[in-house]
Length: 134
Image (cartoon, rainbow, N blue to C red):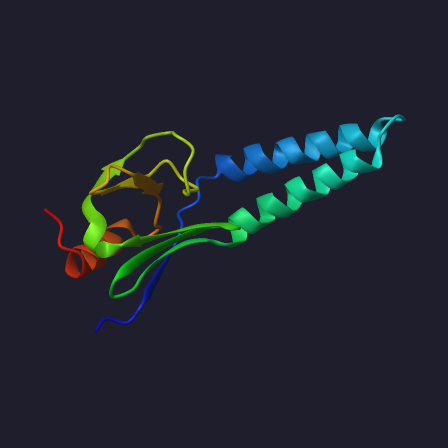
């Protein structure tokens, strides 16, 4: 039985700049408007909370049987027995990754996820040890 291993996400410098820069610009514009509504402020606050949550809690955990992928309040549990491939990629599609230096996890059902562990080689080695990859 393997102990769970947690891998933090790699973070490209420009992703938080883009996200939080946009939130800061939107907040400044909202606060300078005379006709702002209470629901505008709540929506902006929720945007800040989601952004902070994503950057504080994006990680990947390998247990004996499952890959747990977490990105802020969003999560997925993928049984290791369902994983058929893990390949490096720079696919820019929206994903549970904070970097374009990614790994594409493909499952037997054709569904997959893009992740970006900081220790990419360590993650791939641990995954290969725990999952039966073809």
